[in-house]
Image (tube, rainbow, N blue to C red; front, top):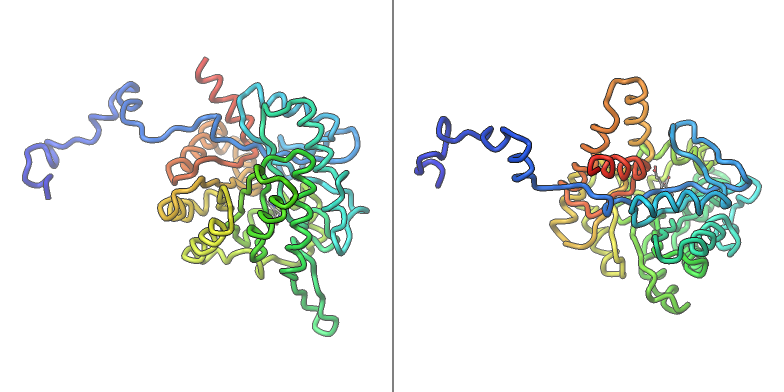
Length: 345
Ligand code: PBG
C-alpha cells in the first residue's frame, strides 16, 4: 500500500491526533454538519382549546388548532423549513372505515388551513397519510376479520383507494408534502395519480419507504390515541421486519419508480445502516425519522441527569447526517434549532 512505502505513512511518523489538537483544526477537517435546514418538526394536533402534554414524551404537546399558528411562527423564526402534522382524533370520530380521514374538515385539514392562512409559504406542511389515527382498531388500513379464527387481515387495495382520497383532501387544505406512512403496496403510484388528476401535480410525495414494524413507536401511539385501540395487535403484515435491509432497498426502489420525491427510513438511530445503504444506492433526497421512542429514551435519561441532553441530541443529529440523511424528522427539532442559534450568537 502507498502508506507502507512512503515516510510518514505509519506510526510513529503518522500521528492521527495532529489534526485534533485545537478547535480550529478540528473545524478544518470536520466532514459533516447539522443545520436548521435539516430539520422537520412533527406536531400533534388536538381538538379543543387547551394544549395537552404527551405523558411519555415530556416537552411534547398536542396543540389545538387555535394555538398552532403561534407554535409554527416560532418554528419559522428559528428557520425550520417544514412541520409535520399528526392528529389526535377524538375517540368518538374513529370508525372501522376511517371515514374521518377523508373529511375535509378533519383536524389535519383545519390545522393546515390555519397555518397557511397565517403564514403562507413561509414554511412547508407535511401531512401523514395512513388510517391509524382514524380507525377504531388502530391499524393503518381497513381490516377484515375472520370470525372463526379472529385473525385480522389488513386489506391492501381497498385501503389504497381511501389513502388517495385522504391525500387529495390534505392537498386541498394546503399541505405541501404528502407522506404515506401506511406501507400498503402500490400506494405511492396511486396517490401520485390521484394528486395529478385533482390538479395537485406540484404537491410532493414523501414516501415512508423503509418503515419497520418497530417497538419504538409506543409514545407516538399514545400521543395520537391509537395504542389502546391497537391493543395487543401488531403491524408486522405491512411494516418491515427489523431483520431485513436488502428488502429496504427494494421498497425504496419501488417507491422511487412510483413517483416518490423523497424517501424515508424509520425508525432512525437503530437503522443508520439502512440510511447509508439507501443513500449510496439511489442518491435521492433521503429522510430519517428520529421516532417517538428515541425521543423518550433521550429525554428520560436526560431528566435523570444520566445523559447531557444537548450534547447527546446534537450528536444524534450528526450521526444521521454522517449516515447520509438529508433531513431529519425529530421531536427535538425546535430544541436543536435553538441550540444551534445560541451557539452561533
Ligand atoms: C402512523 C405513524 C406512526 C408513526 C408515524 N406515522 C405509528 C405507527 O406506524 O404505528 C410513528 C412515529 C413515531 O413513533 O414517532 N402510520
